[in-house]
Structures are given as C-alpha cells and as structure tokens.
Image (cartoon, rainbow, N blue to C red; front, side, top):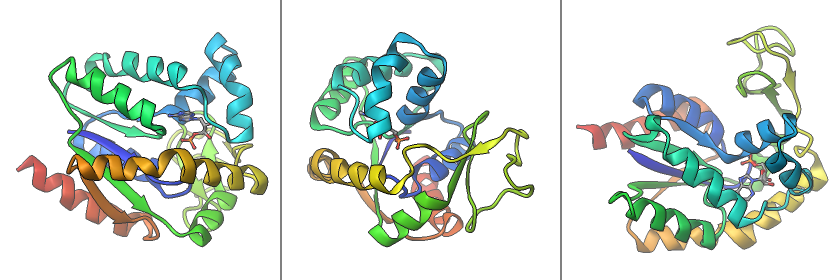
Length: 217
Ligand code: AMP
C-alpha cells in the first residue's frame, strides 16, 4: 500500500503512521524526522534545512524531492510506504507522481486529517518526542509511564523547538497556503479519504485499520 498522510501539524499523522506502519508492515517515512536527524548530525543537508525548520517555513522543493526519491528506492519500500509530511507543495506532489510513474506505480490512498485549530494547539503545546526513537507522547493525552523517559526505548523526551506558539502559527499559515491545495489535487485523482483528526489516537486508528484492512482483503 502506498499511502500519503496529509494534515496540519498536530493532526496526529505521525502517531497514526507509527501504528499503521507496524500493523501493515510498511515503512513510515517522515520527512520531518529525516530533517531533524540531519540537523542533529550536522550534515550538509541538515545545515541547509536548519533555518527553515526552526522558523516553521518550508525547505526548498528540490532538497525535499531528492530526499524522498532516494528514500523510496530503498528495498523496504517495495511493498508500500506511508509518507508523513510529504508532499507539502504542488511541485512536490507532481514530482512524486512522476517518480512513481517511472516505476509503474502510483499512490493508492491519501488520508486527509481534518483537524480543528483548538485541538492542534492543545496537542502541539503538550507534545513530547523521544530523542532516540522519535516516539510521540503528550503530557496529558498520552503521557509516558516515567516522566521525561520513552516507554519503548528509555530515551529522553524533549519538546520540539518548533512546537512554540509563534512557530506553530507560522506552520499553520504555511500549511493553509502551500499544502491544503493538495487536498483538491488528490480528490481529483479519486484518492482522497477524509478522516476526523480531532478523534483520539485509538478511535482514529480503528478507522484507519478498517480502511487499510479492507484494501488488503
Ligand atoms: P514535521 O515534522 O512534518 O512537522 O516537519 C517539521 C519541519 O520540517 C517543517 O515545519 C518544515 O520546516 C520541514 N519539512 C518537513 N517536510 C517538509 C516538506 N515536505 N517540504 C518542506 N519542508 C518540510
């Protein structure tokens, strides 16, 4: 299954992608995670991306397209993948379609996580991430068993520097301008499935499980 998750920051895409990835055994490709790793390791790509990520702006399309095209050529993507955070612009969507077309493949599902601003702000301000495995927690909705420590790997939890009020506002603006038009792009291709991103993680996973489970039969 080749899947895209579209939705504003805080819609729960990463949380759902992790469980769907485990259940259906397809890789979760988060371009945000790839960039944060590159920034942490001070790679040339990370150094180029840093200023954009810190301000909540978009890293240039050519950089993102290269990252994703290379990642999709890895053997673990043979049976499908979940793209979380890509494409974010029309140019990225066109590039992805073209890259897949060259392999006689196409995207099968685009899930649009419709989420209210109120829920987004609450989720992002309480979100905590594991430094080691990128596991996602929330101080109220999904706390780790031991404060500040990842349940799965014992890594330290941290708050993403771009999860502050000012940067969140900018990320939402950028989403509305550059990414939201993609919903129509995929609706026209008959690939769009709208889901309610306001639901809690378990309720939403039940819905996704049905959508993807049916496809497997
Ligand atoms: P995310 O973890 O998906 O919220 O992404 C964090 C940040 O990484 C975004 O605010 C952007 O600065 C950058 N980023 C991630 N994916 C993309 C993309 N497809 N295009 C441009 N910038 C991206």
